[in-house]
Image 1 (tube, rainbow, N blue to C red):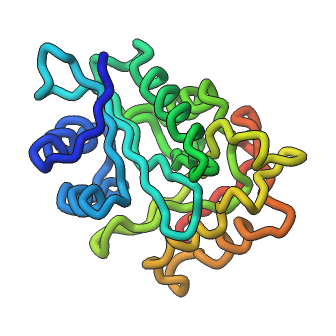
Image 2 (image 1 turned 90 degrees about the vertical axis):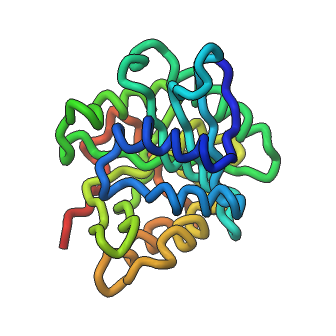
Length: 234
């Protein structure tokens, strides 16, 4: 199936309604208006896999976010239509996405947020965190040794705890001794991502401190998930 970059409001609203809403709980999902604004200002890119016989019915989506002061890219959302899961659609989408992104000399690494399978239960609609982690393992994802949490998407929601931050297939030039080097821009990316998060209410400080280690951030394999740091609700 073809993959296209979507920018028009009607298609973006359709992607939000048919792929994002069914796959993510409200506390993890930005509003359709915020998605439209992010795409309009160029801070988010929406890539959609669709059936050429029915372009109005998207099959899968990958949304990436860029940063002003970091060469890193965040894979904000990946969603696959329920009837297409397990058919390789998501792997094909992200493999192509990663190949394209890593070929860009202005990009360092691709980051991804994932629920820790020991702290989030499988959901009949939103999916299985353990299966999602195995999916990222096939893409050579590694867990970054930082106390990560997902900041609140808006003032009506709380932060999401029990999360992992992954780096997907990091290029060799940004890795040394199983550490992601500072040149990858992780610290600057997280500082920008957490800029609107109140450090008095949320554990922003420990996260940024861990991400800014001069020697780089240790990477754990997916099999070492039990050794990854976990942030719980204060």
